Image 1 (cartoon, rainbow, N blue to C red):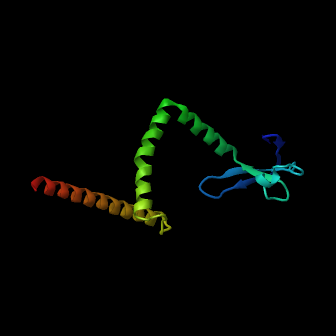
Image 2 (cartoon, rainbow, N blue to C red; image 1 turned 120 degrees about the vertical axis):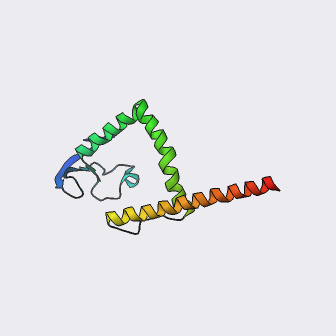
Length: 140
């Protein structure tokens, strides 16, 4: 495997069942770091730069990039950035909610549901107050 001008050599292959799906992880090492003027910027390791690679993950990333280059993919990304990210940003910034406190899946879902309800109630209340102010100004 090559990255830049230095070659990485396969050091170890390991089967992992951590998570939901089994995978094969390849560990590479670059032992040509000795004497390189950029070594201190590249790695702190005494034994050279290392990297991990999973073929299945690399295939999925290529597929995602190809999908995003299509017109449909770009349109979907545009919609996604408008819809979801703004709400999460509002919840994190405005309500200072930056982490989940529950651990089990059902409890995490419940926690997110309660946070979402709180967010919607806050929006509803703000909207009602603005509408009430507008009505008061019109009647004055």
